[in-house]
Image 1 (spheres, rainbow, N blue to C red):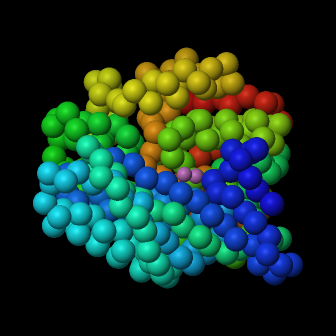
Image 2 (image 1 turned 30 degrees about the vertical axis):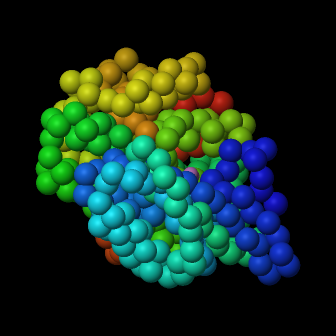
Length: 305
Ligand code: CO
Ligand code: CO
């Protein structure tokens, strides 16, 4: 039902009129020093693509690369972080595979299920829809600052907690109220993933960045130009499709283009459901905010008053 031909979050294969399989895989090198946290963040990131399709994860498998000159206790901690996240998701860890490699890498292959009529694609925006994002932005910038030793893990606790946070409850809320489109924000950053949704739906969007949540300290580093290479690439990629109002600062442009690890869900829903959705998100302590609205103009306008 969903394959490589569109830029969806996961593949979907119909088994019967009631059940379709949702399959996804993701893994990467450590973005934090603590091995347990790295495992948990990577697992939350891998599970997210199933949630972004509206699915429920069933089983997970570890994908591991590990050097033979590092103590095995580190590997055990990474795997424990991943296993605890899988448990929290309600899925079951059923196996995995490890290969020797110079740099550690970890992630999951996740299989989930979904009702074939309830698949949430990223190309079904409707004019006037409200756009809601469920997590702050800035993970790429902050983990870059961490790598450069400009900040400590303790100082970016909010961001680390956010990256570990499963998109599970947000996904349950949007399935309950019914939305038009959904994706999760990852490597292409907010604007990149929104552009994908707009192109797929042949529509555009007005974005209000003064309404956005950013992780603590992210703005400061963006102002200093401490941003990952992907951030600049994403901003370039946004190209003519994104029009920034004149008072949008370079730092804000970076934040809106920042590649995210385990980012939030970007949801497009009927404006009549906006209040209910935001109310449910707040009641579950999800830091969701209204990012903007869908327009018929085939361009993204980033508007600051
Ligand atoms: Co995704
Ligand atoms: Co992915």
